[in-house]
Length: 147
View 1 (cartoon, rainbow, N blue to C red):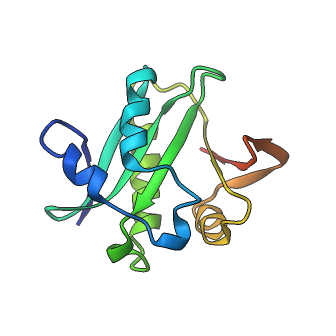
View 2 (cartoon, rainbow, N blue to C red):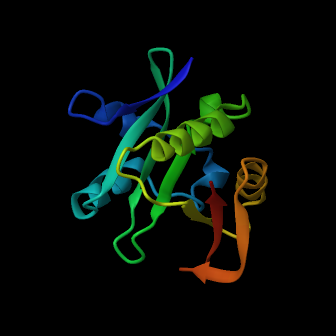
């Protein structure tokens, strides 16, 4: 069963050992960079995506200080576990986690991706994210989920 676990001193090495396929490296920052960023992101959390006892992916999400909205900054599934439907299930776990935070008064979750990453675009659309026409941040297409 797929579930999320907080990245801690006990599992961070596993998180930074996860890799996307070589052709995907231009689409997502490394998990080591994401964990370093976490030092400067006050309202974010890094979580491992687990299938049973095995960490198969990584995600970083929280409240962005620029717009005070929830953002998914990172979502990745290790290359050995791609193509098995884990990405969609992991996105749903993050959505569910954000929706169930007691002090959450937000109605949206935002993310961005490289415009050339057609696979990410399709997966996010299937999960209910809608592109915001003409809105690019840092050259990435912005997409939003409303609940």
